[in-house]
Amino acid sequence: MAKKINVIIMGAAGRDFHNFNVYFRKNPVYNVVAFTATQIPDIAGRKYPASLAGKYYSKGIPIYPEEQITNLIKKFDVDAVVFAYSDIPNAYVMRKSAVVNAAGADFMLLGPKSTMLVSKKPVIAVCAVRTGCGKSQVSRKIFEILQKKGLKVASIRHPMPYDKNLTMQVCQRFASYADLDKYNCTIEEREEYEPYIDMKGVIYAGVDYEKILRTAEKEANVIIWDGGNNDFSFIKSDLLITITDPHRAGDELTYYPGEINVRSANLIIINKVNTARKQDIQTVRKNVKSINPTAEIIDGFSIIQTDDKNMITGKRVLVIEDGPTVTHGGMQYGAGTVAAKEYGAKTIVDPRPFAVGSIIDTFNKYTHLTNILPAMGYGKKQIHELEQTINNTDCDVVISGTPIDLTRILKTKKPIVRIRYSVGEKTTDKLKSILNQFLRKNKLF
Image 1 (cartoon, rainbow, N blue to C red):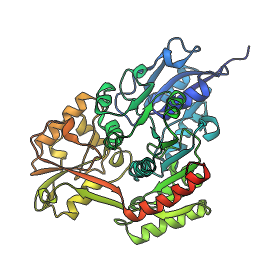
Image 2: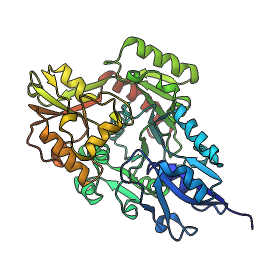
Image 3: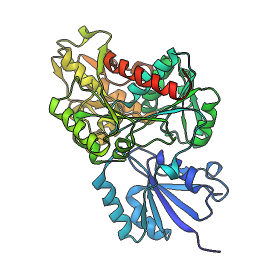
């Protein structure tokens, strides 16, 4: 019997688990000896449990910090390392390849043919060039449009299985606030699920996407893939919409795997055109045409709204932004900052002198962050540290630029004004027309 090929999967508790499930779990040729983890706190040190790993992995699969990759290759006599996470510069990927190759192993990138599931229902996938381009607002607008047409719609979200008990997260269905508590959701998870609940919608996520897809198909006429980071879809789509961001013009050609989404898209939305510079919009348009000349391109208007702009005008404000967008997404600001400037805040307060615990670590890691506080909340301890940082900050009011109601999970002495952002009317009208074509083509209209 031939020796099995020893494999390590480099990931961040998402794409890595999916690649294992669909490509390696039942494959007798390979032996996955370990996962490594980065980007997300507290993933390393856990195990991918035996109950999910299958018959070849009776002891489960350990998860190590990515920093140990060279030693792990030697320790486990590794033949190949699979790179399986997202939103990183192309040069970074090749640097990891150099590290792996120098240690003696092959470096692998699995593509759509090896990893995409095929649905029995029509699928619309919404993906992006970078984290924070505006995928979720577009996905939710599509959900809203289809729902108003009387269709049964289910969204499936890119994985965020951050709770330590992975066996509880195999197939998660979110349709109520109680579901958020049931699955011990982090702030990042709530940012994606809560807006669907507010629309009386349903969204799935978890670990085993074959099971998730088959469950969602039972209650839906149409599936929406609501992408995470800039990853490509786990499900083969009938309509692929890729969101680009002119505030980070050029990234559409230089980030992995976002460039795959640009090259594969049927429709490309150049988002945030109402707040971006004209020359940056033109750069994005030129770049996407150069690698995907057949895709339809439309402008995306991202509209900022608040419940009470008078709470902002003339005040010293602390701005809280969506965590992934401003950390590994690389943005220096988000919707909260835009609102602070638009509604005439007196000062945007720098939160760094007031940070505690892991929030200090976040600022040390992401040195581009200055006058914003990322909504970090991977577990109760970090949520408490975020709460302490807010309470310590010398400000009049807190602007919450995240998609959720932070007052549901934070106790703060500061008044919080919530910022909402949505797809503008012009973009909505374009989407309605495109979706009508999609529905006619799939005999749903």
